[in-house]
Length: 544
Image (spheres, helix red, strand yellow):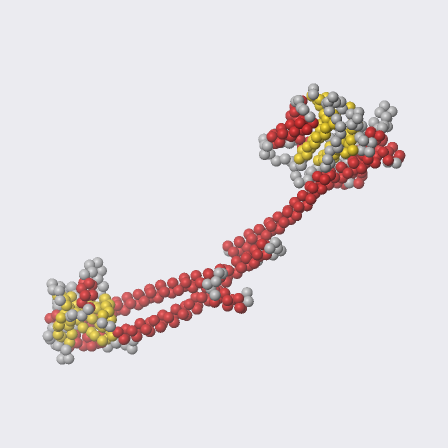
């Protein structure tokens, strides 16, 4: 902080600032302590003065002649008492430069009477008594009526005079006796003026010192808060590059450390947000890989169901038209989870499409090599046709993944079928995927089990091509293991048996069948977390 800022904070303490408020509170607290201390000191000094003066006066009176006799003062009226006169003269000499004793006398009252008398000496040292009619006697009467605690000394002010009345009554006396020592108002005023000046000067010095100390300690308290506020302002603007210096081990140090942890958390949250943003972009891109519109085939219904467990998925399905007016049907599940699985899903999907469309134009050497891995293609008992040749997409894809990306050990369980909508004939390869089922009104008609290993595990893997004929009313249903392996809140699997029991029940259409499975599946899962994607495809040939 610059010098100007320090001066501004020091002077304008009423403006909103922690340092200013703390220093102001420190000042007020210090002044209160100063005033309390001054009052206690004044009370103690007064008590000490009163006690010492009382002891001195009572001792001096005890040394007078005949002082041990009862009412020796009253018996001295109208008599010369040089010793008592000298004592009063001595008390007069207590005057100082600050105050002047203007009156000294003795006030007396008979215990049985109601009148006060003033006893003082004439010029010839004779003690005289005369009725006291001044304002002090009312105060003395009130003092005598105190039953619980009567002070040995009382101060009264009247007619511009401050008087101290010392009780000199002894146990044997039948009268009350008070020694009055009066000081003039001017003298007392001088004392008070001097005391006020001292108090004002002391208060000003204390004000400056306390203000300085308050500001110093307030700065030490406020500095960590100011540092924290500055960094918090940067954080509010989105700047997470700064942290708060931790310079103490007290509460401020812990606050700064926790604030720095919060900044680290915000940085991590920013990174997570960036990752989530990228995942959302990837999710959109991945969904674009899925068919945006299912081909419309007369007398056929194709229904799909796709629910990824996370932002991106390793499952996919595809339905696409081929140049010879046949339809490619794909359902696959790439191993592993997350972004890597999603990237390979896009790769598998693209390769299957490209190879299925271009397989018929491959060179002869490549076709011969691939046909050896698909034992049914080109066999004498199962003559190859253009529909079957489209299935070369599977071994082509297998070799590309295994040879080019074998180090990543990524593979997919995949079903690829080529359907002729006119005849209902479908040739297919099931590369390690879950069995597909052909269902009709009587229940499960056929099971399409795997015909080869998963795609992409090893180059030149052998796979078989199979064929089925979908008759009117038949439904081909495929799914991924996210359906059968889904778990309930009690950690029980959905199971294939439960799925097959749903296939056995009557249905109206392919979409009706998938809707039934979906509803039962998600009711079974309920609030349990889903760890795998749910993908289903159903193809139905319309009944006659």
